[in-house]
Image (tube, rainbow, N blue to C red; front, side, top):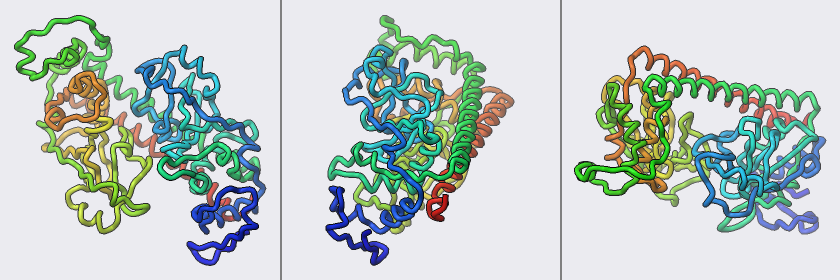
Length: 456
């Protein structure tokens, strides 16, 4: 066994390398060696002994992506443990059947092995048919509870085992033979079932959160009369030349009748523009050279979704950099965070004060008067806001949403009683989601504690 001589120093003799091909110092860091010792003192088996492990599709099919069909997962879709629905892509059913080796089934545990390395997603029966790309490993077990395995791999202990095995210089990644070597502690069936039940409860809370949010969105669109509006693409239509002058746009996509139908529905009700209601304050781009392994969070668009700020591939700023930027670029409780780049139109109401700096791809919306912020966020995240963003983009792949366009985005206002009902549903949705996260964190914490305690 390698000898640990300090918190960051270990001594490894050549005879102790065994069959491994790793000679990089990081692989033998004391934090990893201590954990290996903790796990190997328990009853354990290699991941390949308790599961079949493969990876996703290696064929480039991005030209077949669409907004409907069979869900196709990428590394970025594992940011939510139970698979994120933020910015999903789909493929035709015929293409899905041609990718039989990468089909995913309920109970499969997905692990990011390229780019988003170490992220974990548990496949449930919520999506039906499902497949994904080769940046994901598919771990299929009938030996132990998949919920327990997912919780272990997503815990600090499991992530350390994954990070330890990362290879590469420019393109970092985890190869399947290394993934198969990860040790899995085999606690008693009763303990594993306890962890699995926490994960199942978390899933139920997560589902409840989605249902409540969907009810809020259905109520909003139903009251506005937008739910049944035809949003199909019209191949032919006419536009007056005067309209092109006032809009300063001559691209045909901008004048698609479907966009105008939404605007007409909005204008049947009292409405305001975002610029009428909020002051827009932009974040900052300090540059990747100041990123640190620990410190205060630097919040980028990839960390933002309509439900929360997540730690997906989280970057950090030093105490000194944070101190220099905090007065101008740290969002405040009660503000709305709105993405304008990469994936524009993600709106999130910051309900609790946070510590962190936002990137230049995110705007802080500061209310100029009393405004129901949950209602505004729901409107932006719904087809009301998304269709206006799509229209502004001219039909291209959106990379930037200009502040001037954001200010002109229209938000319809329903009677206060309806707004209050929508706010209540949204608040209940966020509460259920928070409870789901707490249950999941409890499951992972119990696994970590049991490993550290060294008992079964």
